[in-house]
Image 1 (cartoon, helix red, strand yellow):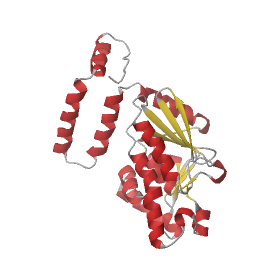
Image 2 (cartoon, rainbow, N blue to C red):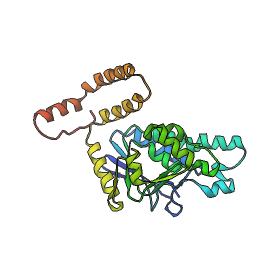
Image 3 (tube, one colour):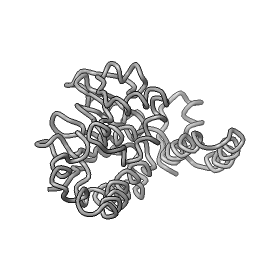
Image 4 (cartoon, one colour):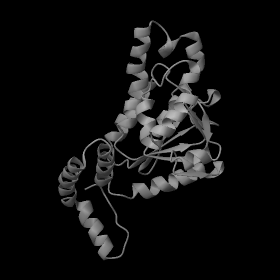
Length: 265
């Protein structure tokens, strides 16, 4: 059974983690390849302007497969070097694919997002949570560490102090606390989560695709580079954007008091 179901509605692609019977665990052999294939297809399709990532059933993702850890099977089996390679070649491939998506990603967190599942959600640009959502990075409770790069991901979302608190205690926080801490943008009723996510994705998808992808790139790079470097990147990118037909359309639409129709040109 495939890990992901993929649905398309206009310029928006919805990726659903589809192992509902076991709360959508991640990390089985082949998961990295499946995510990479889906994300590569999105990146090369300029008609895609936004992605929604969610989970089937009552969970977003409960994280790594605990039974596989118990049985020392799949990605979690073999010698220590083999397990390390399993992380690099499978789990890390999945995370790199998500992080490398060039279009905005909305995580619609419908239920528990724990461990690897929490870090996957945090790779999205925007997170919307159901009132039933919970978040935790409970690796230490299992006697392991965040092997998915979570110590790099989570502090960038909620700051070092709160990330350290969650990692060191293994505590699980509810959706309201996640919103207070800035982990999610908003909390909505469970029944309206996907409606809210689709509405937000629809507003994003109206933006010009080249400017949209370049804005995401600049936001990402802006966290790592100096201000002077950020200004230089912005100047170079802006020169290209001014030469696009979409820029001319945006200016004309504003002057003519109508909605712009961007075509990626």
